[in-house]
Amino acid sequence: MKYESPGRPGSPVDVAPRYENFIGGKWQAPTTDQYSVNLCPATAKPICEIPRSGAADIELALDAAHAAQGKWGEASTAERAAVLNKVADAIDAHREELAVAESWDNGKPVRETLAADIPLAADHFRYFAAAIRAEESEITEIDKNLIAYHFHEPLGVVGQIIPFNFPLLMAAWKLAPALAAGNATVIKPASPTPWSILKLMEVVGDLLPAGVLNVVNGPGAEIGKALATSKRIAKVAFTGETVTGRLIMQYAAENIIPVTLELGGKSPNIFFNDVAAHDDDFLNKAVEGLVLYAFNKGEVCTCPSRALIQEDIYEEFMARCLERIRAIKQGDPLDTGTMMGPQVSKQQIEKIASYVEIGLKEGAELLVGGHRPTMGGEFEHGYFFEPTVLKGHNRMRVFQEEIFGPVLAVTTFKDEAEALEIANDTLYGLGAGVWSRDTSRTYRMGRAIKAGRVWTNCYHQYPAGAAFGGYKISGIGRETHKMMLEHYSQTKNLLVSYSDQPLGLF
Image (cartoon, helix red, strand yellow):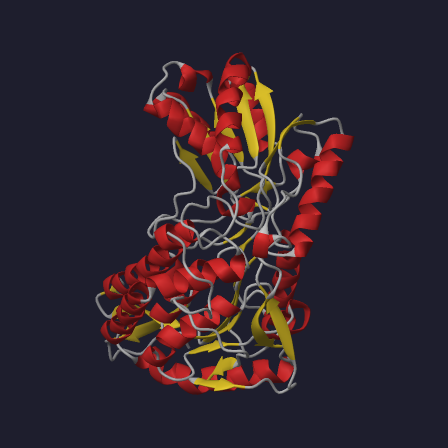
């Protein structure tokens, strides 16, 4: 099936020539009166104009958030949960519209947005709607006359900065727990992908009290910094690359506020020789697990961008993988037959191409891909790059540095000890994969790999209820789990004496 492009007759998505910020439940023009052209990655042609806001717009959004937060924070958990469930229902009801908008704005295939991004976004709102209903305060009896009450209270107004690789899903990851816990928020979408979040606000904006959720667009260096450095926010949450994450952490430290940081990765995907012991469904699943480095065109923080294959099966296993990689269909992201769309921007394909060149200069062997494909018709100037595999060793830059594109660095290992050594030989620790028919081995490896999430005989599963976050320089905090309610709350302790006796301290 092929969807019509947004704005064309028959498309499920309408496009306005220009969009505004969403502040205080209303669409508001930027105070700068400036706009940027938002380009479609598949065609390199304009979708619409987006506000190029200034710091004053952040202040307006914070005004609206502070005005709304008190009443929202005092609402019962049942009331807040009901709103979150309405948001989830609205997302589901507009699944095709949001999926097509997300694909056109980001470049990812609509088969992915229909099957993963949009359903998972709705599910995260439902998960946190349920989780907040189950939260309980605590009472501690110090002695028969002294009782400690512990209550969970919202932080207040929080700032959230969304990445370009999963605009709607990452927004849901951050919004759902923050709103469930009673906070109001100001969101800054990624500059390359601002439009789909604005389409989401058209769908759900009137379901929330005015000012509880605000969206301000603009350049990250100005708007993101204005939000993250503001003394009017109680927390900042950021997903993106590690260099910017360090800056966000510095800003938060100056204001002494908590942060959630989900940063870069260079995830190892380890294949032991017993995966090839039989030519069966499990072997095919393992092959698919390797090829998932090209999922979302490699623009995934947990991308399995390092493949470690036991040396005695390397030739036969890699041959099957390369055959599968060559069969990946690139093209129109709105065609459900397309497996891989364009990179998000011209800057991304230039970065990817430069890393392929670096790898080749370091002595890596190019096994497949490595170039921009020739695309026809309206996609001639789109930001497409071939799924690429380089064989080399773990000291090469293509093994150590995050490329954020469909480039896989492959190497071999002799035994379990060497596989573990290579896997942990990185500054990052966000994700990893282990593939083996030996469950004792997968358990040992899973516990020994220094990463926040280790997929075992699977990859790229992101269910609500499974904690997600990194070790080392890959971040702080755990998203998609009920523990995030604690990250968006503060504990109030009432220590109450039920005795009339003097304290006797003086």
